[in-house]
Length: 369
Image 1 (spheres, rainbow, N blue to C red):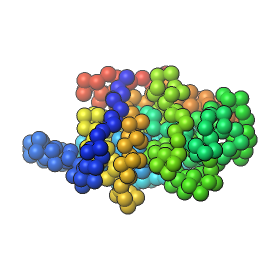
Image 2 (image 1 turned 90 degrees about the horizontal axis):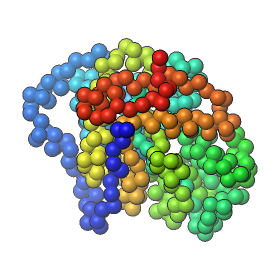
Image 3 (image 1 turned 180 degrees about the horizontal axis):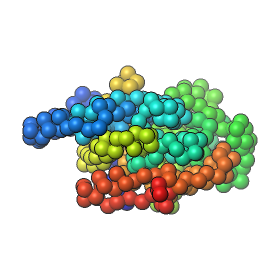
Image 4 (image 1 turned 90 degrees about the vertical axis):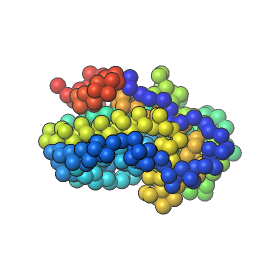
């Protein structure tokens, strides 16, 4: 597998207090200019690919760290040369899939559930998963005054980001394995599943309109900073402690017409993941700087530090876990049994990995024939 180490480890108080300084000087860009020969920079800038621009979508979440850091540090742009990146930020999977299927987006960072739904709805004609991006970074955070054990969730109101999204599917499956029942459409049952936008969830938690949430980072750590307690880390539920939380997908049309551009993007994402691993503090600061540009202010150290440690960047799409998540959605009656054969095309990724001296990754038998 081509997974890399966790994004960071716990640092000293001095490192935390230094975070604002890191945000204004993320380091890699200036280092690169010193280390790289000018001739190489000129050659990259003049490189001509088959498309003049590529439209890349992502979420302003830490689980999209590859996109945040790769864009912030120019690592993806460097591989594209004269091809311009047109970044687009999304808050929900369905809107990104709609943009991809509608032709206004070429490549996207996105979770497994919307990837599956988009593939199935287009009858396998509109997208391909071309790489992994991240694993982990999902937690069940609760109000400790109301919920002290997992059994206490019965009868409580727990938020997920959206009906049928990756966290919603995982939570519904967990509820089912507890022997409890919930109507997947309304969210009503032994546990009240309240579908709430991640931006709204912290306020709902503080106001007491929800008792907890099964959410990705940094929302989970925001809830903890507001007095919540982590009752469960989803990573603990998976046999290998890894599960896909973010994929990289592409429009089949764009892949067919501009494989050189797609390959260049993948070179950038592989190098980004490698850089994140080698420079965890700089990478954390870089991601925070990009989030600040998106939302107007950086995350507090008490939020980003625990959030960052729970995420693993990986080139491996962890295809077997996507199949498991698909089975959970079928079990919850959110989708019918899909044929996922062809959802992956890892040809270009494995070409990039091989050239970089890294092990190739598997599509678990779900590759394009």
